[in-house]
Length: 572
Image (cartoon, rainbow, N blue to C red):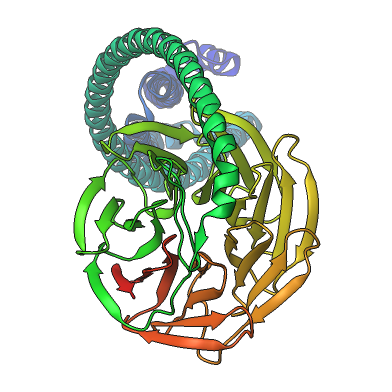
């Protein structure tokens, strides 16, 4: 039983006869007070424990449950107080009546006690008000927590959906990574295989290079031996030829009959006073794609031609029949030259090299390489079959030794060369250039001897006279000029209204007796001028397209011309 207040115990001692009536009231009041305190403490402790133990949702549920319990407890407490108050009034009313008189003396004490009880009752009401306020606050907090929980639930749902998407993306990325990994492994394996093949190919290439170097060394040794043998043979032949020439000079000066000069020695040169051609004797379909160069053999009516079909052909101008074809050139043939002994043919090619053939067997003797651009002009020395000069669009002139098979000198100049020729003594090179200048070079030193502005536009052709005293130049300005080799002064100029030079490599020519000039035109006509009066003596019309080259036989006739369609006309 709970401990009673001191004033209650003293009152019970003084008024023991009223104990049966007063004890229930006091005991009920104290029991209710104790229960209220126990209930509040127990509920508060249980609530604190649940808040510490359970998560946020369980906390809210427990708070709502505690609020309900607190409401019921307050209601129950109020009802109990009211019942007890009524019961106490009913139970003590007789005692109060019976004892009213004896108790009047003690009224002041009872009044004080009643006031104390009223104070306690007011305290109970205040506690009830505080509990109500606390209940309202907790209800508001519970609603706030519930709203926060709903928001957190929505955030959690969004995060879960994002997490699911992220997991799907991660799965896709893992799949893609696996595929890329497999592809990378495959590429690595292929790369290793290719590296292995490359190493094998490099090893084979090194082996082939070593073998090629060995073969080149052997070939160069053989070439040197052959060159030495050829040098010996040529020296012997040169000595014999000099002896023959020296013995026949006096006879040659005396053997002129009706304009014909003859040499009785084998291999000697014949020439006849040239006649003016006026009729096309033969029309030969020589090449496909154009025939840019033609040249007669010395002491022969055989004609050599070269064209864009990369072939060099030999023709019989009497019958128009093909005698021989020279193959092995890998580019268009832009110029031709023949050695004085008619044994060797040299072709300038667009494939940056020169091809040397044996005229009798059509076998390739040399392929002269060294130019960096297409070779457009070539000529052989008039006194020796050994030296050859060539010009290319790399702005160089190269001097070649046919016996050794390689270049012995290179001349550099500022403008590309379109045509060149040897002087009669073989010591000077004459070259016509794109800048319109005629230049003379020393073959031994490569130095420029003299220079003259021959044309206002590019020089296209050079033709040296038989005696070597004059040289004919043709240019893109549609003029044909005759220069004195000793002074480089103009001796004559030849022009015609319808005569227009077709290309940078259109070749004109002098007749064998140096009395006429022949030049082709864009309209397919061939004009012939007399050197003595610079007048046109004949105009030949047989070609249907631009005439590219003219060549006069050393016998004085025939005249050969070639055009852009590859046709060759023989004129008599």
